[in-house]
Structure formats: structure tokens, C-alpha cells
Image 1 (spheres, rainbow, N blue to C red):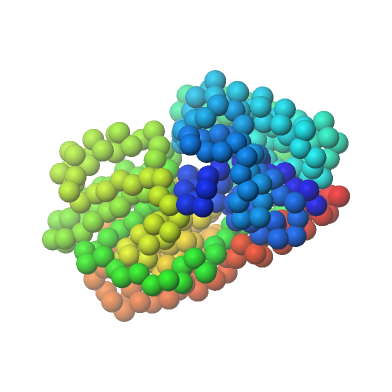
Image 2 (cartoon, rainbow, N blue to C red):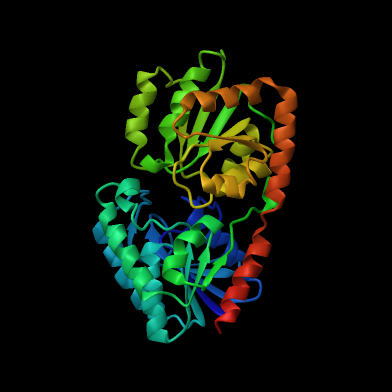
Length: 375
């Protein structure tokens, strides 16, 4: 098969600096499918990237103006340029099937598929219809309109990242929805790495309002009154970073909280393995690949008790799920894990077992089967 995957953002080179779960999933699926198929990833240009790149057996084609990754709505002009160039390039790329991976690329994928008369698949991490303004602010109106247009025009098939996403898609997609989650490459997490000497909590997340990082920071502030030495590492970028920095300064946490971003893949994995506990306090999540990657590193987690977190963790195997609006409950579970060695060991082993249930090779075979069913 000649497979065209469209992702608004995609890493360059071999450092694999993922900006989010969409890019990570697209990369691993492309890498696996490229073993048997001709795979092209069509994406936007980022600073210092090549327009055409061969990586891990597949081809990456970058279009539009070079731009930085932005976790919020981003630059409207650059997005429009990307859309136009993406459609033009996609029409000239001979493909048997095309997949869009977010609300922006669903529009592009549909245009390309209609022109080439080939099947189109919409990959869906989450459905935000009716929630765009709540999740993304006033500019979310654009996303609301575009997602409704995409769902009205429809796809030949939909891939939902979870049962929760499938339920949201059913009113629009009827019976053409396949549930295929995300995964982990366990081989990436085999190398040993020593733990930090100071107890360390790590969070890997975009810094957006709906990710609720404020709860984690407030919980951490409480922990500093109980632990003489403790650190928090937050890996990610986004529009809420400035307000989070102000909060950290107001709570006198500047020396204990570190913000990191654009980390090469191996550095991120080393951070996972060197830390002690993972946390994702988000109110809205499509899946949460970072939770599974942390679990593969043997990290217990303290996450929000949303339906999706219950689904992917098999009801809190490997960690704890608590109310995202209760910082003290987060702090309580962090304390339990960091002071009770037997509990920590039990949850760490559960986390490793949980991660084994998520495999990119299996997920790629399931994705391949969906594609083949449409040809």
C-alpha cells in the first residue's frame, strides 16, 4: 500500500523531539508500517528542518512556512498557508489511502482523498464538539466550526484512540469506528538509569489550561512542607507557562521546580527512569501516552480520575487516580508512594505489567487492517 499520513507537526532528524501524543503515535505507526508499505508523512515545516527527509524507512515531506510548534491555536496565517500547501502537495502524492490525524489535517485529508478518489481515514484522539471554547478559550470557536465541518463531510472510516472517543464519535460516524489505542516501544526503556538522589516527580504535558498543571504545583507546594528535599520536573510547552511560572514564584518554589522542553527522545526516557513518580492532572485527555511511557519506566503515577485514565490504566493499575480539583489528595498519594517502600514496589511492578499491554507493532497491524478493509 501507498499510505499518506498527515500530521500537523512531526519531529525532524533522529533526536525525535515529540511535541505531543499525536506526533508520537504517527511516528511509531509510520515506522512499523514502513516495514511492508510505502509510507509518506506530510507535515508542516519547523525551524531548521529539511523539506524532504528519509527517516526510519519512511519519507517525510514538509510544507508551508517554517514555524515553531505552538500548543494553542497558533498563528492563523501560518496554518492557512500550511493547509493550502498541504492540499497541493498531497494531490500530487500518489497514494492508495490517506489518513488525517487532527481536526486541521482531517480537512486536508478529505480534500486529497476526494481529488485522488481514494479512501480517507480520520484518526481521532478526542472529540471536542461542544467543548472547544471551554478547553481552548475564545479562539476555540474556529476549532468548533472546523471539527463540525469535518464530521459533516465524513470519512470512510474512523480510528478512535479509546472507548470514550468511540462513544463521542458514534453520533457522527455510525458504525465506521475502530478502537485502536496507543502504545509503547518497550525496547526504548530497557537501558538502566540511576535514580535522582532527591525524590522527584515528573510531569510530561502540554502547558494548556485543560491540562490542569496548577493542581500539580499546588500539591507539590504542600509536599515541600513535609519533605526537606523534593523536586518537580515539568516537560512541555504551551500558553500557560507564564502563569505557571508566576504561581511557582509566588509559592517560593523556583529552586525546586524545573521546566524543560524540546528534549531528544533518549533524554526524555532517561528523565522518566531517573524520576520517582509520574503525574498527569489533566481534566481532558485523549489517551495519555506519557502515562504508559512512565509505566514502562516502572514509575507509579498519580493522575486525575477521568474516565479515560480509568480506561487506559485498567482502573488505576500501577498508580492512583484522584480528583483533579483536589491538590491535597494528589499530595497525599505522592506522600504514600514516597514513604512506603512496599507500596511503591507494588505499584512499580503493576506499572511495568500495565505497559506490556500496549505495543506499537500490534497497534500498527490493527491500523493496517483498517486500511486494507477500505481498499
